Image (cartoon, rainbow, N blue to C red; front, top):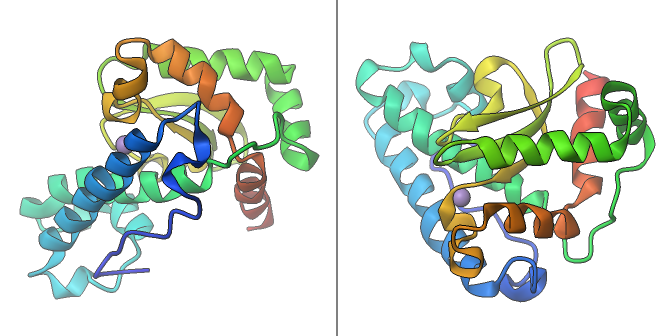
Length: 207
Ligand code: MN3
């Protein structure tokens, strides 16, 4: 949905992902951090009616079309809004431990084994210096790749389609895990919504 952007439904209570992701972190992450990205994105576009009909993906994939003075604000806050909107969908209480169907096949073809994929993903998430995201994406050719981005940079900025993403900003884990990012990553696998990842992959294959 285009401007004015809104906080999406979370789809589950703040405590639903306990003990892996705690309720207080979820509440602050959703009502404060994500809300701030939405507010700042709306503020950036308030005086630019020509861009108010665009979806956030379109804004991010053609940042250079925007007036120079709002490019950074849209990159940071549009990315923040899009990344978090997807992140909530990729979380599910008691989610399945592994993907199934075509995504499972493609992960095996690309990485050799599901566990090898998990290792590469965790490595990308752990080694991202400072704030950012780890991603499983499909590139323009539909090939799966694992990498990380800084800040709120979104895969769509490089023409990639996100299949699964993990927020590794400290605000996503600090209350429970403090400096132990690897423990947060390990716990997060327990609440991944592989059905949402599989749907994202189907959409890539179907276009
Ligand atoms: Mn976040």
